[in-house]
Image 1: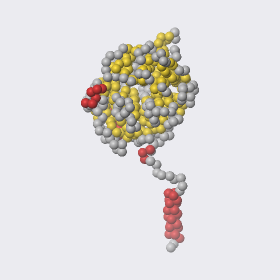
Image 2 (image 1 turned 90 degrees about the vertical axis):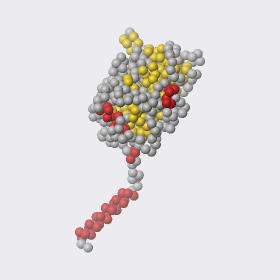
Image 3 (image 1 turned 45 degrees about the horizontal axis):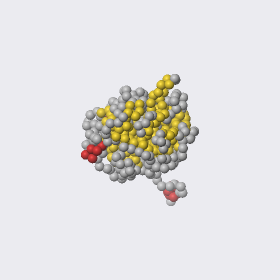
Image 4 (image 1 turned 45 degrees about the vertical axis):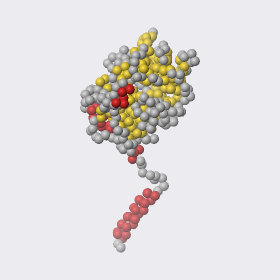
Length: 474
């Protein structure tokens, strides 16, 4: 054999040995799981088929009628806002990975903020939607069709429109079945979304009056005068009581300010926030035999996040615990919202989409332990860019805590927005599961978990309000 031929054989044998050594080398580990793959932070995620279903009508120039009613203050802001230098988390969710579509997306006959509600809270097997029609609750029982098996992707065919709801005979007890948009413009619901506590539903009319009416229909007296278009929250308390929280304008020597108030049953309102604050959001959750209240105070130079416990005395009066300033963020804006997230056990978390600094925007998770305390550290999950408003919702009373949040898909100004699903770990770190839906803008988000762990999400965009069910991995 000539020298060149011998040399070529040696080179080939050496290469084969190197390949084998690489395969057998310690620490190589198994191949990555394709279902858990995440895109590079610098690359915008690919849109799933379900995302394309919603994005198509949005891109077609559908009117943006999902903003608060014209009578309400603080209209919708432009989709993209400040800072554009933020970098997203390294562990970004992939489109559709980690939360397979089981039913939907279903276009509803009303467009506006939706309340997800189940007639049997113990079973939590099925969810319905309640819309606000100028202070009157309108029940909708979506006809979502057959349930897709968890093993199936469940994604609609690319370009196919969302299915419309059909009348559901089983919804007669809810007052009305949803007939879908029927190819036309959906009717417009009022802001804010209603709230349900025990056997009562709370809704605000266009003038700001809040009424507590029986869940299955009937009249109810006004129990609060809120700021038009701002959110309300209500929960049941032990002893058959209900607790309502809302925002209301008050005139002071320094001018008009917005405060958070609480109402026990139909008694007079009690201030939750300090006089002179600029409250922009309030939320309640059942908490250790009583309630936990959280409110955001967005001022011109800083954004304090407050929390306190709420109880009922033996005499039937509200008892407020000490007001704790959990966290102080950078300057906020007049529509700043958040969410109160609580698992089946363990701590609670106040969630705040806000600026971390001059160049970063994301979700801050502030832990609340046995009792609210001042100056708690925040665990941040950064977005690719800033967003205002930045809708967010979280589950309460189930573990793990699930979060539905809207964020930009990329750093570039004008990038599409995505509804991202994930969960919080015990320390408050956000663990992304998928980008469920992509579109130009989202105005409102609601999320609930059923007894099997599937997520029900309702979201409002410029094209309408949609509902879907997704199987979310651990």
